[in-house]
Each structure stands twice: as structure tokens, then as C-alpha cells.
Image (cartoon, rainbow, N blue to C red):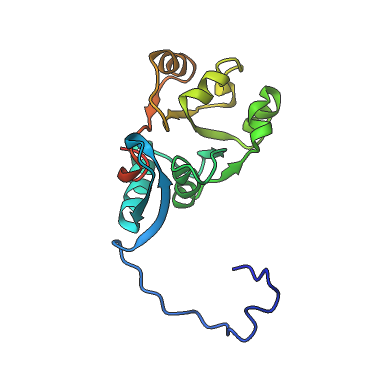
Length: 178
């Protein structure tokens, strides 16, 4: 908790408040126009988020060794797994700036320095990365595409470079991926 007003929390006490949270309570609300084209706020409950995190970690056999490249704006639902799954697996969420992400040598150095082993990106971003030398030299890499419909060309490129490719495209209402 940050006290940006300086003194606004004076006298608030240091006791932990009693808070009861159940799986049906709202974890977050995210704005989307998604596949319908109609703007709306989508409520995601704790149970749905926990299911996404557990399923992702289990299905992809993720461990604390799978450091994640975090590059997605938090207003985009695709960012949710980037900052939640690493907490569950005991891994690291490595935040890269947009500028560094788009510069091949800087991005490659970041991936190698931080031991990144999980990257998800939109098909549009993977098209940009096609001009980059593969990240595969950094070791075993799990890659996924989502946030927008993919194309056969992007999937073929990812398969050639990294082997297994995960499709993470799905509606926000399905808690990011479906």
C-alpha cells in the first residue's frame, strides 16, 4: 500500500484487517471489446483465475526454472498469466521495456541474461520476431501465441524455431485463454 498523499494513513493502525475471500469473489475486472466488438468490463473470479494458473503450470509442466518474459501491457488480458503463473511456480517474471523488446540485440541479451524459458506474444509481435535470430539458443523455450487470431505462417515459423507451439487465443470471459 502506498501513501502518496503523505499522512493519509496516519492512525490507521497496523492490525491486519479480517478479509474473507472465496472462489466466487471477483479477482479483477478487465476492459475488453474482444470478439464481440462491444466494449465491456469482464469480471473474473478467483476460482477462474486459480484454475487458469494451475492448469497452465500443470499442462505446460512449468517449474521455477521457467522464467517468463513479461512485456505485455497490464490492460491487456494476455498479461495476466505473465504475472500470475510465475508466482505459483516459484519462477521469475522478467520485465522488459517495449524499447528493449523491439531491439533484437538488446532483447536477445535480456533473454539470455535472465534465462527466459517462456515467451508468449501476439501473432503480430511474432511476425516482428521472425526477423530476429531465434531465442532457442538460450535453451529450451516454451512459446505461445494469442491475443489475436494466428496465421499458418506464424505457427509454422514458431514450430520450426521452437518445436512445440501453444495456442493461447481465447476470449477474456474464459479467463484469458480457452
